[in-house]
Amino acid sequence: MSEILADQNSKIRHRTIVDAFQSPDFYGIDDLLTEEHKMIRSTIREFVGREILPIIQDCAEYNHFPQEIVRKFGQMGIFGPTVSTEYGGGGLDYISYGLIMQEIERGDSGMRSTASVQSSLVMFPIYKYGSEEQKRKFLPKLASGEMLGCFGLTEPNFGSNPSGMLSNFKDMGDHYLLNGSKMWITNSPLADVAVVWAKSEEGRIHGLIVERGMEGFSAPVIHDKWSLRASVTGELVFDNVKVPKTNLLPGRSGLGAPMSCLDSARYGISWGALGAAMDCYDTALRYSLERIQFDKPLAAFQLTQKKLAEMLTEITKAQLVCWRLGTLMNAGKASSAQISLAKRNSVEIALDIAREARQMLGGMGITGEYPIMRHMMNLESVLTYEGTHDIHLLILGNHITGIAAFK
Image (cartoon, rainbow, N blue to C red; front, side):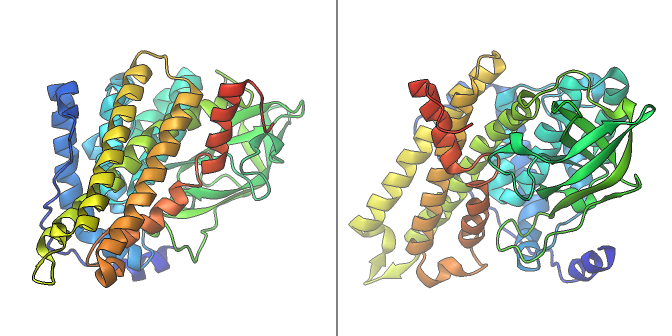
């Protein structure tokens, strides 16, 4: 694995990029943000322009995860922004978290995946459900980027139905014995720790912290992805892994525990996908003003203006949804169904905008000179992970009717 990464790393160029992005704000959303919110957004936007945009095209082309970004994320306070400063987190609110995810995904969905998994799916469960010893052992190192984490819920045969998981552990007296496997796990091949969800002998789902180097624990990489190519994805395999009893998350058990982590991650995705949508819109707008056809810019044609107007409308609606959801998250009032609506809506409009923007750029839209095709391929994964597009639809249907269409 290290040899492959070294070979890929030799191909990665640090391009000179002029980040001309202009954030759309048709309804004055900035007026709803505090000065701290705007400062955080500006800081992360500059970071993305400096550290992600110059390398991301090559990273995607060569299916390379830039490992150095983990420490840089830690130095910028990108990991665990809502975790208490006592444990190395940022102590920020959820709107700040959303804005951070928005700016990173404007750079690349894979980069945002790395950040949101670390924050929402690794640090969040340890912070909310971990023991004091676990918090002090893991959270500061995860926040700083000294450690990278991953989240093990999805299995080869159980994606949208996590309750059917086969991963299990047995009480062996002085330790637990963990067996099973997980699939499609962001960060896993390089992760130092994995928050793994498995069933006890009683059939109850619990979270366990599995550490790299434990005998019987492996994390093979998944190759040949055409999406999220700048993110590293793999499996988690547990073959009679001895897990210390002190590594069991004591604060909560049952399926609701991992699902609460997914709520936090889905919230971040709702803002993140919006960032990708903004980038595609901004790219299409600038291109249409510069590209001359039939003696005038593309922007002068009615069909182009129609497309841009529809993009701006959907972005504006999504901005308002995300901001309002952020205020509900801050107040501890956001429901899973409300989060599902925002995740589903943001990803749908982002993918629609990416596809439309790709057409507006014609042949140039498929080249690496512009970010649109990369966003488009990434968003196909975002549409599926953290709850598929259809599952979120059914979560809303259940909320509306009171009738569950799935278990």
